[in-house]
Image (cartoon, rainbow over all chains, first blue to last red; front, side):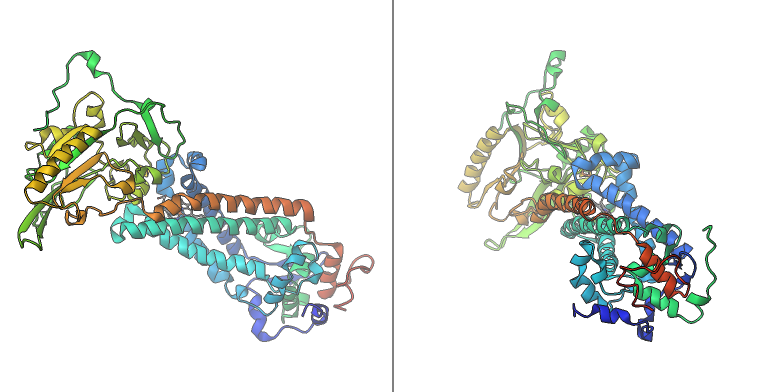
Length: 251
Length: 329
Ligand code: HEM
Ligand code: SF4
């Protein structure tokens, strides 16, 4: 397997129809110098930033209660009482906001054949040998891992969070169940924050990524380098790629 | 009879508090240095075998603490209100129990409320600095202005005692009348008890008095009479004399072997250390990787390849070293 990726990468044959789910609504290629590729629509970006903001606020307010060393963070929310009261509500915002992202992105995050190979070569990626990586679609296996672990963790956080939300849900569970919930909630929160750190680091390390979530598009070179299969699918798509009007250079 | 605590002197000098913040041995979410000298430990002894269920203590508690319990609905038992609330720091719990050995119906009456554990689970669970404190005389007290209303103390408590008020979102429970004890009085409930089922003094005195009571009970056929001072929480500063000390749970669910739940210990222990270390490690790994590997930048060849793929002749010279360069053509 490891000896052959260069052969596989030769092909310009469009991927089989079954893999077309990689391309999401709104993705498009605009030839030009440089090529630009639309990656996230306006609503998708808005949805993402609401999710990001609520996750950060939850991490800050939650960590304030997690350890006395960080209790001072309650000052950001107007004191301990406010932090306690507001955290679960931000959680509700996060849950629905992430649900939106989930329905937008889940198809493109389904497992693909090259994911196994990608994971096997992830050491090469970190060592700076991206040329050894298989071509991947809109998301690589690492991004898919972030997506699915966040989905699972947020489901666990909302469930355990509601059990702990004494103000409204106190009578519905026993104290023993609440104890389990709080242990599960704090472990899931730590894991979610670790996944978030990985996610943010990847966006920082891989230069050219931020514009996907800020302005909605990336350069063709970025797509070629990191998501070549996706780029090829976009180019091969009838009515797209070659025929799409170029982006105005001012953008 | 246990000698009653005399009324305190009205001399202003006598009003000097006998313990203060200088006597804290534990403070929630804080590290403190306990004082070198520990105060004499106090205790309240509740002798359920002497209790007549008159609820004078329950009323005295409401009165001293200026609490107003809502008018509720009778559930058909003497236990009223049906559970502890943020306004009822103490509650007489009534149980009708048929003794399987004698076939006798026994009316068990237990005064429920904070046990003032030597190892308090509420304090361990509390995330807010100084919302729960423990004085070196053994009193565990809630400092309401520091309370954030999270209810973690409820999860930490092995006896299901604290209640968070829906009105001001702060946790409440029996204070052991810390304000009365500070000026040399006994707790309000003890003062009101007409049968001396509740007595108050130093922990040693109370153990001694309990011994005397237990001997008396044994001599009258209560072979299992005993003191409830559970070692799982390192002892308590509210103790019971029970006629059936071998089965505390018949007294309206008094825990047989109370201890801080291992789930709470895990949550407040290893989870915090491992969790903080994991998050710190993730951040450090990112920094170090970036230092070593440098940024992952898109090269001009990548852009040229994309241009070629989309059918635009790439600008400038053909990329030479790009292994990708030749492939797509
Ligand atoms: C998704 C919905 C969520 C709900 C309903 C929720 C609810 C709660 C509740 C009720 C508490 C107890 C304190 C309080 O009342 O404010 C709490 C604590 C906490 N939450 Fe959440 N939460 C959610 C999401 C999150 C997320 C996404 C994170 C982290 C990224 C998080 C991290 C924490 C942490 C660290 C604590 C403190 C636990 C401890 O003290 O050990 N929560 N949460
Ligand atoms: S409700 Fe108040 S006393 Fe109880 S754990 Fe939370 S901050 Fe501490």
